[in-house]
Length: 421
Image (cartoon, rainbow, N blue to C red; front, side):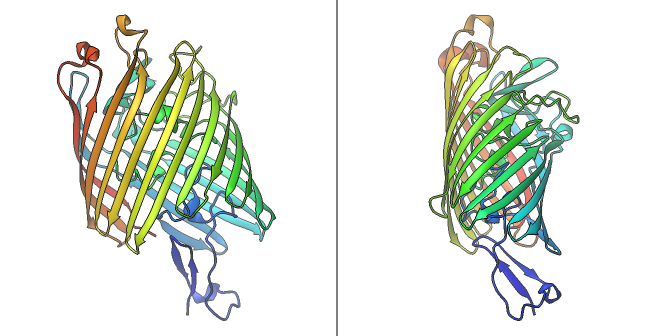
């Protein structure tokens, strides 16, 4: 006989010897590793929230009263990007995460998470080609038209959560590195983006603080409403992707999150980032974001997830620039189709353009469409064969730098991840 533990998005069978005297099967909520008051499906990156109905792709292990959940994904691929600033290469963006929770009693829990990436090996210091992408540096120069690699250790965090009353709870979170309360769940953790190998062009307007060396967050939660505040290190990770950068705790943020229904997750946040870029140490950023995440289960093996994100950076010497993102992912059995549409305003400085452009702000547009067919499905590991096509638009004055060629990119990839839990 087995005890069955269930949530809307997950179930796990526990051997009968772990029943501890229970005579009949019954249901128990599987808790988030960050806050024991939350269902596991709500847990996003850092302390952010997904819709409660979100699917979970991972392997769960029960260690007595403790829970261990493993997540991850890898995208071995060939990608080709057009224009003078484009490139083609074989690479493999990837990440692996473990989430652990230990109940102290019925009203308190300790949590821990570790996230690793082998991007430093597969992507190298310059990262992968991505037209109009920007942020961070390589060999002392700001990156452009490249997505930077992530650090080997992208998260090492601990959390403590406490139920104060039946509808009220609090949590403390510390990460080195970790993620402050700023922005939506990071792109690779959103169901709407999990099949897209690329980072959004608005990453550094929306969710780029997900690898921050030194974060402390406190949160108070009433039912499905949460208020959070963080102090953290504003500086982006340095070029040494294997080390631990110096914690500074010189920046701050606040976020309000609300899940009004199981299918919706809303957030609004604002933060001050002190000197985020090493190549521009005197430039500070005020970042404001708002997002709507929608998820709808369409059956036992079908799901539709969509995300809208707005992000604004108000940067020293440049003023305010905005980004908009809309992405959607529809999965039915072995087949998945997805799309992402973006508009981002980037300065000539951000795009590393010649001096004559340096007082201008350029609106950039990008649309990606992809399809994945699972070769193995729901058998522990899902291996999918996919393709993606991206078309981009830039103002004509940038043709002097990018050439007259249409901005596009295409890729063929394998998507490897744990099956849906």
